[in-house]
Image (cartoon, rainbow, N blue to C red; front, side):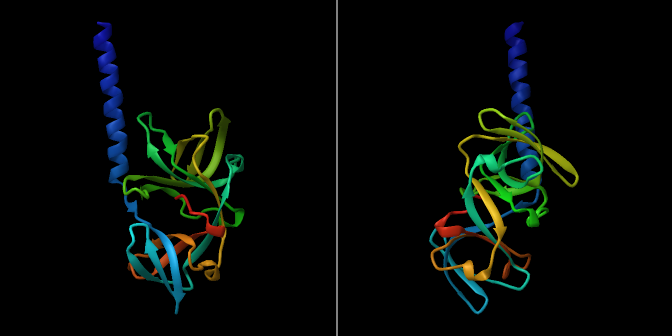
Length: 203
């Protein structure tokens, strides 16, 4: 009887996990481009992707440039506005792959919870919102609130933590690591995250 109960419980957990992952897969998925800057010419960003392909995308006056630098887990505090690429867990929580902490002036950037294509091509989630309750134990466990919802995020001690601030086009220098967010037309960028001093944006 105990074995039957244990098997039923295990099956239930597996089914819940599958349902959570399926729900994440059903969301619209943001597919950023990741690479290294070759040049910027006539409002066109030329870069080489991590797979070695050469790509170009237009920059407009509306393209948001964000400068990304390394920070540590102590930067995550109650009321911080953060973003986190994560993997959904069977209990409904999210396990962070990385966390970006936004400067105060950028609060609200990309707010929400949606699908996200990770650097390895797998699909997870991205959650941008405001930190509520936070507990410290083997990393961080925190609630992240956004318009229309809230998620519980588990941040392991060893995941990369980055700080995001407003940037400028002239920081898109040759060799800089970038994450490019194409606009709806696919020809221009709605945003570019560029690493500071050779830092690779972890998102």
